[in-house]
Amino acid sequence: MVKPPPIRQIDRAMKGGLGVMFDDTVAAFYTLLLIAVVKRVLG
Picture (cartoon, rainbow, N blue to C red):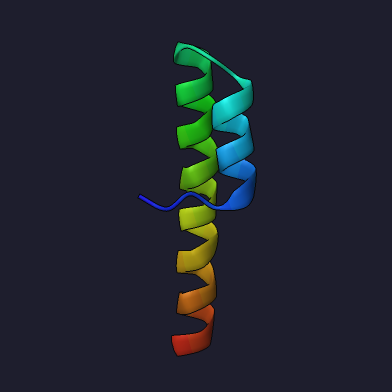
């Protein structure tokens, strides 16, 4: 699995369940951003 740079640092800095949840939240934001960009470009 490839993690974008800020997600990797968050994963390493925050240990335990909170780190996993926050890591997933940031990854979900990236995914939503990517979907929005693709939708905007492709119509």
